[in-house]
Length: 307
Length: 280
Image 1 (cartoon, one colour):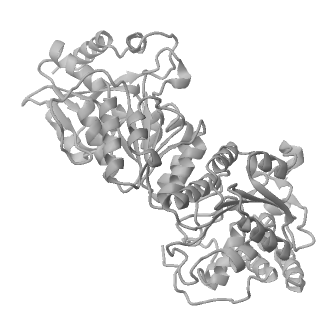
Image 2 (cartoon, chains in turn purple, blue; image 1 turned 90 degrees about the horizontal axis):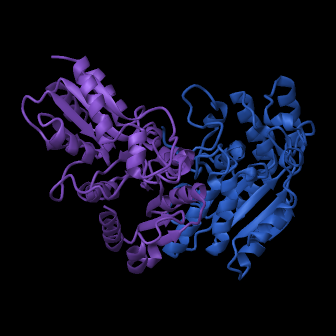
Image 3 (cartoon, helix red, strand yellow; image 1 turned 135 degrees about the vertical axis):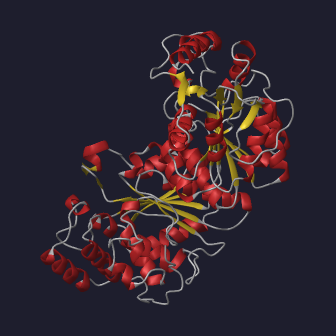
């Protein structure tokens, strides 16, 4: 997934000299190829994210297409006001890349973990919010971001969970991507980012009769397509490596409540920070979003909502 | 939003400070608004920039290749409105209709108004946007210049110093920071709230080529700007302008209440008389 990101960025920059990469002193080896291929388009702004994002607005005003890279804990969370005021207010074409979202930095604790970034960015007008699940979605999202005439936040989570798709994708911005769709399915799993892989695992292990959808674009979303999914299934289960409030789960509830009221189980991070430290798998378990914990939640949800 | 372009109305007063201050007073009076003191401290600075330096096209504030004036201290926006009235970018109806329901001109700088390059008011933002513009001009190899006008209280904000490091490191000698050092911020003097020491020394230490001037002496301002642009140095430029908050009206000078106070009939009349009597 990181290779897909790097390859996409280099390809875009080589094609378009207006593409700039700004980093807040992050992405050490990730940008080797970019620095080699497009050195004049690379700016390390130093450990100074507020200035970097403000500068990106200035560069966009001068006709450039800045891609601003940082850890999701900092880009966007540390610089929400710069995104709102300097970039989104004027709909400037800046792409904000938040890497390591969720619990990727599991050993480092709260400062580097990011489970509120989608909620923070969804509420900012003009801002597109993307959350790719694998290398194919990553490449698709990079193309969407490049083509977007306004600002974009792209959340990049756990990158080594493997593919969920089998081939390169083509879809309009906002599309739901069906991974497994079957007529008459009772339950729909709707997931984003790293949790799409988990949804696939649940499909194979626990819920073979379910439909599974990936949501690489949190905003804008194809509301009609999502409403159709709501209509076609009795129970909806959302999965995200993010707070259950303000992210994908909230989005599905909002669309469902307006267009097709359904019971929705929001699986994600509850309203608390991490207590412990450990591997990525440990943190998922601590927060109840590992496969075993999710199975228990789903079982209880299904039992509480019989046909 | 209605077009602000081609209104065809120009005062042609050559940015005389008395006229600019009168416009500010009229806007504050009609709009029943505040921030007069911090607009008055930057009147001469803006007058000189508009008259002698900013490469704008009079009938098009959005013309390609223009210089950029970034009013990072958005609270002083009425001073820029007064200059925009001189340019013909806004009309007298914007003065009399200031703050009327549905009007466009806000109490803080909004970049959707041609003539205002940034949305500011939340402090410490415009400076970084200006640094990005200067970097963009360098990358495009244009000779555009970027001026960022900040308040001395505003430089409490961290991004200012992040941007200062960046501007010096990248040798942005097309960027000029102008600090309106009027000595006041929201709750008191800058000395009382968060002592700054010598701003000029700090900026010099950060790598800026710096001048300290009387921010109300137009000859002094013009000379400093010319000298800095004439320099062969690759350093970004900085002017620390010593100013008086509320300059030009006796009961407003050095009185921080005129950051917050609205005019009444008596104070409006007295201020107008003092400003009209001032010799630009």
